[in-house]
Length: 371
Image (tube, rainbow, N blue to C red):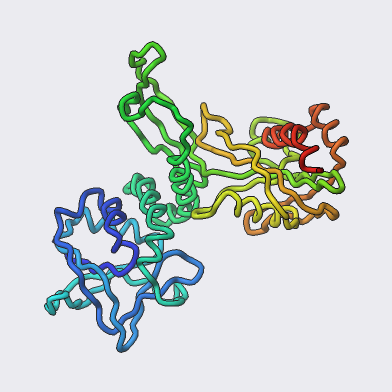
């Protein structure tokens, strides 16, 4: 059995339990501190680091009684961030000195910032990171930690999408706790997207439980799609970019004209994502957003949920250099008079479903927006 001192995110017991794969009630957990050290936020990241600092004291949790498997799971979770265990003497609240192990970052790997606050982290990121840990730890023993690190941001985006999804209620009377039975749930693949398989039964319309179904789903985060519209000049803006999935299906025209679109980042509101994406892809600062609805883009195969907006602003300039180079985006824009835009819609020139949906919404609400 081993004793570890946690000073950062793993002080959040729900996260610690997800990483260990069992409850903390089997362990001895107590408050402790490591003298002459401080806990600092890592610049550009959402997790902290510990560093020597004379006269300071790093508060944390002393967790005693960890098994070899517990240590393997902890090393897997921390390993992708280049944190390794070192022996240190910590002091308990009662004043006892206890030899324990502490995760220290690789020297020079991260840049320390301001003092880190567990309370602030829990409020902003606790639920997201804890839920993300469920998916990450499902691949323990299957994928190397440095490979998992590549997927961390995407997994957190999916976790945020799950938290948003839990709030979507329309008055449906059925109860998934009673009307859905899960027999097997497997996380089959992880990268930018995830793939999960499930065997389940659900209650049918006649009241009986249906047969066991084997299904798979592409796991995605939530997204926004925005059609910029200038009500004074009566113009819309559309964007064009290359789409690998369209290429993979053997479509000879994988450069699609679309609405501005992008993922909702962890902790971000859909409205903020909409403003951010329009600025990134088109260089346009919107004055207002009109919500045009939200829906699952392909409920039979994907978890993807899209919030739709018409964005109001001045459309006077186009760009051929939109998007973020760091994400491999190569985007150009075009501004069209509304009537010309709708002629192309009716002529079946566009293959992007969110763009078509927003076009028809705008056609219904255009007079109101222009007024």
